[in-house]
Every structure is written in C-alpha cells, then in structure tokens.
Length: 203
Ligand code: SF4
Image 1 (cartoon, rainbow, N blue to C red):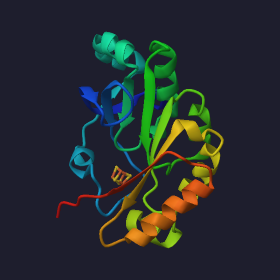
Image 2 (image 1 turned 135 degrees about the vertical axis):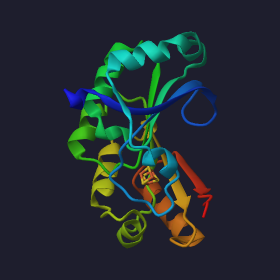
Image 3 (image 1 turned 90 degrees about the vertical axis):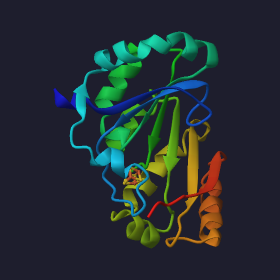
Image 4 (image 1 turned 90 degrees about the horizontal axis):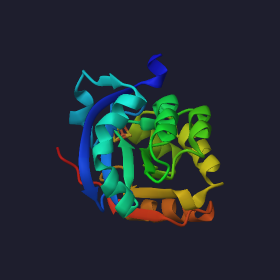
C-alpha cells in the first residue's frame, strides 16, 4: 500500500550538531501542505521524482551507520517536506530499527491530528517550525490557515520535553517584537525548548 511507503528524495549521512542529538542521517522526503514564501527546501521539493520506498528498504540503506548512532545517541532525522504526512511508514520504520536509535521528525505540524496522534509514542523528538503564532501572519506566509498547527501544538503540550520549537524571525512577514511575542506564547503553553533564529532568504 502506498500509505506504507515514503517518497524519498535524499539521504545525507553522518551529520552532527544540525538536527537532533548525536550522529544523524537526514532522510528527506517529498510533499508539503504549505506554500511558504521563503521555502528553504524549494529546490529539493521541486524535484518531481521521489523514490517510493518501504521501511525495510530504508532500513537496509541506513543501517550502515548503526555503530555511529549507537555510540553517539543519534539516529534518523526525517525532514522534507513534511514527514508527518507518512505516519504509517514512520511507525513501521520505528518498529523495525533498533530501539536505541533516536527518531527525530522535523515538522510544520500542518497535518491531521490523527497522523500526529499515531506517532506521539514512536518519535523521540519533534522539531517544530511554527512559522508564526498569529493566524493572520501565518496564513499570509504559508498560504494555509493556522488552525491545524495550533491544534497540534495543543497535543504536543502533553510531551513538552520531546519538543523543540523553532521560532523564526521572517523577513518582511514578522518583526523581532512578533518573534518575542510568539516565544512568550509558546512558553505560556509549557514549551521550554525554544530556538529563536532568523530566516536567511535567498532571492
Ligand atoms: S513547511 Fe518547509 S518545506 Fe513546506 S513550504 Fe514551508 S519551508 Fe517549504
């Protein structure tokens, strides 16, 4: 079934200090429900030909770095695109790989609550790019309503230790003051792990 497969674009091995703990392999997939004005992955996502692979096929390709993952407390980081569009695949992969591998997902949370709920216990860390907490600015930047992201943040409040929220300052869309207010709102929700940064835009 296609819902058990993942639209693989690339695997970048032996990363450190970029996304997730320890040594990680970044597994990038296609597909994203948002249309961000400054999409950081536009070139990758424009590629029309992902390779649909099963959890077993991916495991065969990434297990070569098992020793690095085990020794460093690292594992696989799924990015993209939006990995949470493929919850069946992610759950199957988690069950297949060693339990000591850390599974990290980079997400915008613009997915159904059902998908997120399916993965709460299987993912070790969610790295969330919230864009902006203000519904008007969010929609103007992403082209989609903020409702889904905000509802999913409510779900993640149950497991704040597993969540790192990235809070961007987005040139021409929000200000430093907006960014600070977004961070305050997130702290008030119980999220303590925040990463405030500024998008570098290429025009
Ligand atoms: S959520 Fe990420 S991948 Fe999707 S459009 Fe925005 S920047 Fe691009």
